[in-house]
Image 1: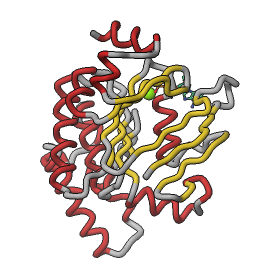
Image 2 (image 1 turned 135 degrees about the vertical axis):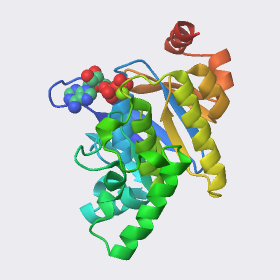
Image 3 (image 1 turned 180 degrees about the vertical axis):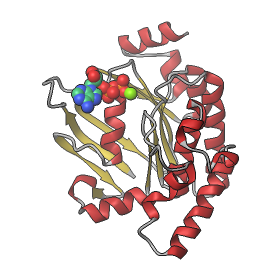
Amino acid sequence: MLIAEGISKSYKSGRRKILDSLEISIDEGEFIAVMGESGSGKSTLLAVLAGILDPDEGQVLFEGKDLYKLSDEELSDIHKRRIGYVPQSNFFLKNYTILENIVEPFLAGSSEERLAYEEKAKLHLEKLGIGDLADRFPHELSGGELKRAAIARALAIRPSILLCDEATSALDVTVQQEILSLLQTLRRQQGEEFSILFICHDIALVQQFCDRVLVMYQGRIVEEGIPDNVIQNPSHSYTKRLIDSIL
Ligand SMILES: Nc1ncnc2c1ncn2[C@@H]1O[C@H](COP(=O)(O)OP(=O)(O)O)[C@@H](O)[C@H]1O
Ligand SMILES: [Mg+2]
């Protein structure tokens, strides 16, 4: 469903490859965790997969279409309907309420479309346990609440894939666990299970929720597999160190 081939990316300021000939393939309905130390390129990878950061090399095929060859209109349509992206830092506009922020991309549409979308947005805020915060401004929410709001926004479009970066202010494990179980439940409720790519550092949560784990190191995926297998039997020395450092 989402396939990235030969992805390399450097930022202009530095020449180092942040992503280095990276390959990834995500199936329909898969729940995947991405692990890796800070600076290994996880956020960069998610932005490339989301279609918002053009790679230097390689292509990202979403449902068979190369994201970086689409017109602005086609890409914006995918962002409004198919790919839900939760970036690392809060990107809510500060002068809009949470609900207004979520509905904002749909303001250009007809009023019917907007109202229908507003209902969906409210429903998702409720499902994420923050229905009562819809009319608050972003600075009136805690880090964990903002993360939920960002996930509600990403899910309100009924995406076929959710790309979820970690929160900048490290959320405690309980909040992460709550969010992951909510996502699991929502996926089951929606019938068609959407895929999830989630950055997570907690091994127990990865084992509990994910079908597959990818371990990133210096811009490459150095190891991947079923969480239990990777954790019990890591093949790459970096994964061993990562697991030792966490356990
Ligand atoms: N906009 C940017 N400009 C220049 N360098 C960046 C930018 N964003 C990230 N980097 C660098 O790219 C590397 C990988 O960053 P990132 O993808 O955020 O890693 P992670 O999410 O795994 O911590 C880091 O060394 C970071 O400093
Ligand atoms: Mg990051």
